[in-house]
Length: 287
Ligand SMILES: NC(=O)c1ccc[n+]([C@@H]2O[C@H](COP(=O)([O-])OP(=O)(O)OC[C@H]3O[C@@H](n4cnc5c(N)ncnc54)[C@H](OP(=O)(O)O)[C@@H]3O)[C@@H](O)[C@H]2O)c1
Image 1 (cartoon, rainbow, N blue to C red):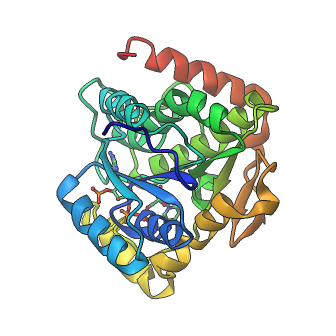
Image 2 (image 1 turned 30 degrees about the vertical axis):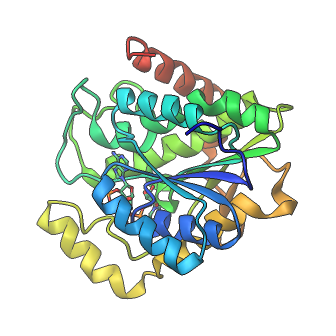
Image 3 (image 1 turned 135 degrees about the vertical axis):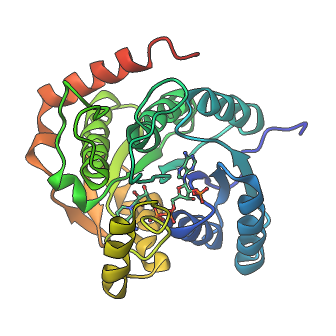
């Protein structure tokens, strides 16, 4: 590509090939944004992109690879993005997962924390200079109402002792919310905002992807009360585009309005401790 892309509102959506991310990418394309779909499985991504192009009538949709649980992959993606795009108006960190059994990444990070948080942190920080240059711009991190049942145990964030899939998922989402508030404090005055979106209880592949029979049965039981992925994407699309939110930062949104979050996420000492823990944890990762 000879010329870098900077047309329309450039929006990144991670985990854009299915569920809430797919419908977020589609909704933004329908609103005329230039959408960068970030996926770990390019074959699934190609199919999703073709569908979105056809249904939205937009050709300003791009597909890029990133496994957010892998810091080296995150770095490769952000380098490739900066090569190709001059602007970034909206970064939606949507990719997420839960794992019935404890797994570690190649570099030894527990996989829920690596996927739902560490990749998000690195990706955002690699792209902050571009977000600043493009400001006003927005970072939107997808958390969950389940964060309220989570804990941040600084002695064992990677849950080496007593792993539980739903516990660690909730912990990772509390970390996402806390991190987003910490980020919002650090970027005041830059024209970049950072907010959390909680999509609600949505019928997607989350949970059905889990290996454990107990978790899969639990998800199957609650499926009738879940909303559609299209509905689940509405708050992300609103948070990305609503003009009244241009200067709003450090908030959580659910059902297209402000929502409360766990007290601990607002604790600045905890935020700073999490920030330091993250920098120490990511130290030694290639940069
Ligand atoms: N569904 C709910 O009720 C609910 C409620 C609250 C919050 N959320 C959050 O909403 C977000 C979207 O989830 P969803 O419900 O739409 O589930 P989903 O259908 O499973 O979508 C998750 C997306 O993330 C991608 N992903 C997972 N691990 C990745 C990795 N290592 N690198 C890159 N992409 C990765 C998946 O890619 P593959 O297709 O390759 O697996 C998929 O595209 C998640 O952050 C989730 O925690 C969901």
